[in-house]
Length: 563
Image 1 (spheres, rainbow, N blue to C red):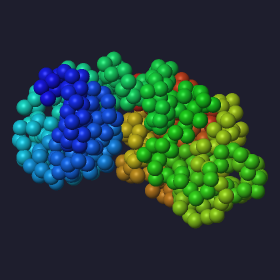
Image 2: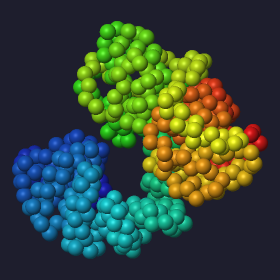
Image 3: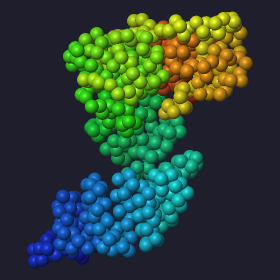
Image 4: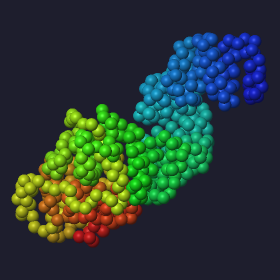
């Protein structure tokens, strides 16, 4: 023990070993030998000694706690929690045991229980800085911002250089809208411990607020001090793609995958980078990584039957199912005839809003609404079809319009618009507020004033879910009457032009072969590629891109000049 306390670990291990030879089942010697083995990097040996210690004396609280820590360090969080439970059961006043128990609960996603455990540790040992810091982390997860901030500040009052507490303080400040204070806290944490995750968290905060140039610097700083930080490499790649620095993004994301080969997130981000850069053939296989992401967990890939991946399927009944947004379904339904041409019997499952539109256009397929029970032999997600058919920029199936309106639905709209003289131009300025990219792709009606004030145009609002069109005399507000996409297609068929942001109406008008002009943010969705004014997906579409992030004025001016 004297050697151990002086930091002479090899000598300590030898002395403990000699003692153990005399008393092979002594739990106290096994305990210390387990600790020193872990400290020397022999995690398996240390774990084995600690397991023997707690087997020899199950009520040995400190040994149970260190055994739990060794399990925790190996990522065996459920087992570590059981050991911490035994530690505090044997010694209820054991503050460190409660604190470590809370950390295990956090790793298991049980944040309310974790916060309770950390509160108990703080009550038992008010001077235990780690307990206050960990309480702050648990409260941060629970959205208890005031308690999180107070706990982190309490920890920092005791240990001003505790980087993890300052990081959690910074994240709390960011969430409560105090970005300048948050940035200062995270930068200080990076100074206190350059190898902490401070720069990574700073980069995440800056990315979320749209400061991508600064975020790139933060992630690069994290990688400079911790080269194996896979999450920073992944997020750096995303930030670089957001700046349209696609070649650099690809390089960094490949580095992220080398660091974390099983990362679905890094693989999916590489796919988006390859696709937006026009490398479709390379991007499609990586795009399949989307099924490893939490965001896709409820989409329904897990079906009762095997997945169709392009194997011979003549006579087989294949369920093709929509998986993403309405625009995605319209864009990629063009591949369904190709599946049927292979001799398969197709069942197409789509969003309810699209059933009526598609029923008349794909007579060879059975069209059903999402969630409708059906029989099938194989299934295939809709956006896996481009990869199955090995699509590249030259082989995109875009030869002709593949969506048309029902003539019976057109006539009521024709009568309704008969009195409207001048060019009829449909307008959509905002997408669904539920879309994670909506703040980048949507703009306000006020931003379109230079267009709306032009003479000789009858502006038809196709906008849904936004109230600002209702009272504007420059607009004929028909959005509320568009009950589904069959009605929208009927109205669009009577328009001379559609001007829209990146939303489902853009895909509908493009699929119908209408003159459509799309307003795109600086960093577009992958399907619009980069530096093009046309789209290989829709021959009648023209693209108008922001020259800089947030610059819709230039886009509106360019569209005005094109009219």
